[in-house]
Amino acid sequence: MTPQEGLAWFAKLSPSHIKMGLERVLAALARLGHPEREFPAIHVAGTNGKGSTCAILDSCLRQQYRVGLYTSPHLQKPNERIKIDGRDIDDETFGRRIVEVNDALGLNHELTYFEFGTVVMFHHFAREQIDVAVIETGLGGRLDATTACNAIATCITQIDFDHMEYLGDTLPKIAREKAGIFKPGVPRIVSSSFWAALPDGFDEGREPGKSGDARVEGRDFTRDDTNSLELHLKGPHQRENLALALETLKQVAAKFPLTDEQRTEGVRTARWPGRLEEFAGPPLVVLDGAHNPAGVRSLLTALDREYAGRTVHLVFGVFADKDSEPMIRALFPRVAAVHLAPIANPRSRDPKTYEVLARELNPNTTVHASAEEALADARAKAPGENGMVLVAGSLFLIGQLRSVLVR
Image 1 (cartoon, rainbow, N blue to C red):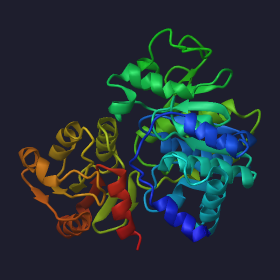
Image 2: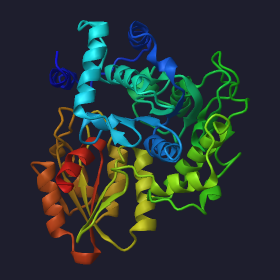
Image 3: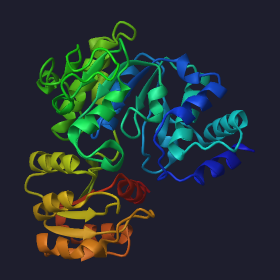
Image 4: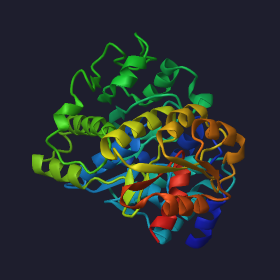
């Protein structure tokens, strides 16, 4: 199998296929000689904000160290998921690593798309002899493939309702799953929403539990501590993500010290595509990955703070397996016009199935045959300097339309 054939083989796996559990990944890593043990990692979980938090951590640590970054999902190419020193893995190397892993495991393994990509990440980072990795969970924490990492700090960002068919239908249940990344003796840095949801007395055999020495945003440190720093990630919620990242850096400072100047520059240069990402107009186009109720609440706050007075045309698409009605009810009345679009993915919800609700909430609603058509129409109709096109509802929609905007 050539590297090109390896990439083609990987592309045939379904990113939507999910099987919870660590046993397949642990067995695969054992066959590879446990590459995950060859470098330390900062492990980040949460419902919203974990990608941005990882991006800040990565940007700061790169001021001094060779850093691997693993995130998901990708927006345009799967290479985006695996970065070293801020650069995506190139096709040749990615294909070669896929072949190397398949040679070790054989082609009859039952790893899912995410599990296989995670194993490739561990293998690649070990081969490249990175100093430290920043690793984002894929789904939950307790049974997520990334939990095999050699964590020196664990961080949990804001939690809310999402992926409830896998994580549970209450916030305490979701919090328990996220808390599965905790390891004995490893620092825990957590958001106030996670801490509030975590049941009293929680430990599940890990030490310490709820009564232990976790560092909690709002109690032990606050977003106000970050006000003096220049941050280009937009939205008030990013200050909480920044606070979590800076506290995490404090907790690993004995092993990975940074100067104040390095932290400041890392924060200033941190970027995270698809999260209130702007493309110049007129009209201004803003891409935001809000795809659950909590994400939409943060988005609406950001609209009030960052884009007050704008006439907003919303391009919206969502997956059929998402509980989208709370997002729709919150977002559609707040904009001047709604452009409903299908996503180029089998999981897409047909816009016609919620067209009636959309029109009840915003009479200026149009259903389009494609996301590209919806974007073009919104850009044509959003008025001049005051107009703004907002794309939201799914990270997959963001990736699809970002490809149009960056051409």
